[in-house]
Structure formats: structure tokens, C-alpha cells
Length: 421
Image 1 (cartoon, rainbow, N blue to C red):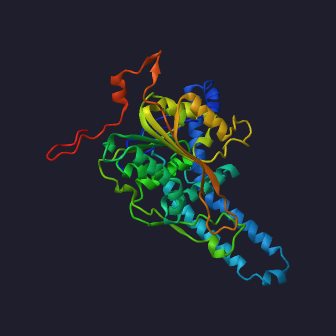
Image 2: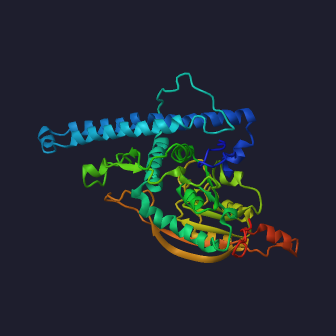
Image 3: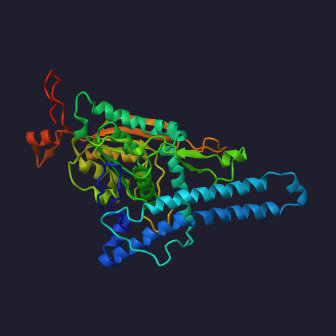
């Protein structure tokens, strides 16, 4: 199903783009424009329904826990005086989460300036959602911790800072007009990495496929102004590996910064759609930064080819992440699971030069730091450059083309001399 342009940061210009991976592309060719529009509307409202169904879904979990507890012998129940009150607290937390989710979808119904999804006869009605969609929604709630809360700072530092530091090393502000350096962040999620890059003055665009992420990033980037003004309870869905009941119901506040504090001159945007289909203009980006992204592909080599295509000669690809292939266990989905060794071979065979490579960068992803079970990813981090001296039809690239492909360097700093842009 296609997902068109999502609004981005305060200065962003919403753009459009189709969304579907290669597996779906084959199916989409068979669909008429009318059928494609119908399927897209169904998909849009399915995700809206998931947001609205959240309270009911969590309520059912709580009811089940209450039934299980009340099935215990009475003398066992008497030994556990706090269980029912804690379940009641979880229900209250879910009610509060629902209020935030309602605000998110309220601001999402007209977020795409180039597509209308119609209306419902009973727009507020809660419709049942699949376990798959509810799991996606609960994962999205945890993304607020990772991207926009103080509690997620350590995780952001381990995942985002290596990428940001490489961008600053490769395109230092004392040698480049960074506003002319274009950085693309596919799989941008809730947009914090792209926002941080834009905050440093670079031209930055985030790209995201998921409506769950798009709705939420639109809300936090365009509707949240006051620091730590909103509260979520992201851990109430976890009923195992808990030390204290207060750990399960502890809140987080967001956003930890004002997302709309970017200077008016900042060039920052978010684009909705499938990465491979949206980005097909050759030699158009100075840098592509991917974080926990390449394993979302049906065919990761298609991602690698796309990045090679869209990078300018001399451009760089910075990657950090594991290889937890998203479609590996999904029925009727194309999924090619390659080792990093295989991907590395393809990267080099395509023509990239690996300038930095670390095969063991440990980090977490939406981790509950108080859980008794915690996962650590042993990630790969690399910087790959598309050579500046590419050959076309056996001839070395024209000097003028090479110069036009490079980011704008600053003029030498001299007293009374305006900077060239």
C-alpha cells in the first residue's frame, strides 16, 4: 500500500512518495489506480483503528490477569494484597496512554497534504485490531522513550552519536557550508536522529514507511512545543521479568527538548514512503545515514544498490545496526537473510570503499532498563564511500560534474569577506 507525504519538522515541506517493498511491487503492478487508492485507504484506517483500540486491548490483558489471580485459592490471594491494586493502576495508565494516542491520530487525519483518506460514518468507534498491529503500536510507544525522553539518552548516545560524529568529521563546519551538505536518514522512526543532524545545520531529510511511526513523528515534531509536557507509561504491557510493580507503571515524559526550536533557516523534512521507490534520483545526496535500518529490507542488496545510486560521487554511507531481518518469519513475504560477510562482499563488489569498520558496537533498542531480561545488540558500524573518480562508458567522470557533485566548501575566512554559499 502506498503512503504519501508526511509533514516533518517545523520548517519541513511535506513531500510525496509511494510505499511498498519489491515483494509488494509485483502485486501492485496488477492493481488499477482505483484499487490501489482503495487499498491505501484501508491500510490508513486500519492503523487509525489500532490507535483507537489500544485501551480495549490493554483492558483485556488486565481482565485476564485479574481472572487468573482470582482463580487462585483464597488463602493464596490473601498472601498477595497488592496484586489487584497494581492491575487497577495499569488500567489507569492505559487510559492515560489512550489520551495521548487520541491526540496523535487527531493530528494525523489530515497530515498528508496530497492525499485524502475520506471519513467514517462513526469515526470515533473502536474497531478490533490484530495482535500484530497492537504489538506494533506498543513498540511505537516505546520509541518515544528512545527518541524523545531523557530516559532514552544513553541509548541515543550509543546509537546516534557515532553517526553524528562521523558526519561532523567528514563534513566539518570549518571546511564546508554545512547547510549545503545533504543528509538522508532512511527508516527515521520518530525523527530524532534526523532532527539532531538538522540541528547542527546540515540539510537533512528523514524517510519512514510505517504509519505508526509517521503519525507519531508528525505529532512530536509538529505539535509538541513544551519540554516534558506529556507523559506515557511504556512498560505496562510487560508482565514478565519485573522486580517491582512500580517499575511496570513508572512514567516517562517527553519531549526532552523542544522539537520546534530549530532555526527558521533549517532545511529539515520528513518524507513518507518506501525507501527504494521514493529515492531513485542518481547522484543526489552527500550522505546517507542508516541506523537499525538495513535489516528492514525484503532484499538488503536492493537497499545497498539504492544507496549507491543516490549518493553523489564522493558521497558517504554511514551505517550502524544489527541484522534482525524483519520479514524472516512472516508468511508469504520475500525475505533474504544474508550474513554481514555476504553484505560486506556485495558492498565492495558494487564499488564502495570501506573507510571505517567496527564489527562490535554494543547497544540496545527501546530497552526497559529495569527489566530482568535485557537484550544487547552487537552491531556493525561502518563508513563506506562512493568513489569520486567514477568511470562512465570507460571514460573518467567529467571534472565539471565532479565539482557539481561535491558539497559546497566554505571560502577562506578573511576579514571583511562574506562567506560564499
